[in-house]
Image 1 (cartoon, rainbow, N blue to C red):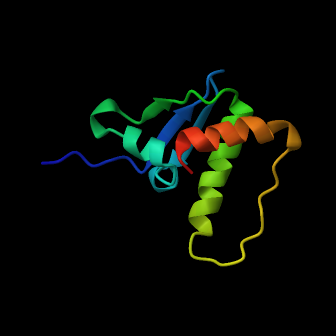
Image 2 (image 1 turned 180 degrees about the vertical axis):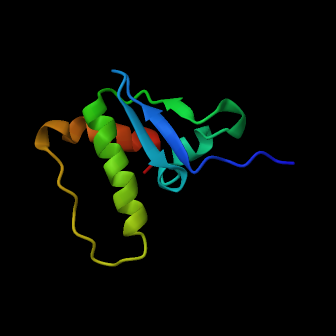
Length: 95
């Protein structure tokens, strides 16, 4: 009998902040989707820097999932001081 996958995964930032997100939302990011190995559990360390960056990434994953079939979606609010780090995270995560 195959083990059922958890509906949630935990993403951990470099500074130890943990974010519990739905697996479906986490899979919006191509890199995370490839990392989700059912034999490795449901906690994944993310080499993305601070918890503030990972928090905004998680917010984007849900935002993208919620608005995937909608046209003319308004932009997310992104603090200017996080723009460079978020751009690098987006590139790394393939979103």
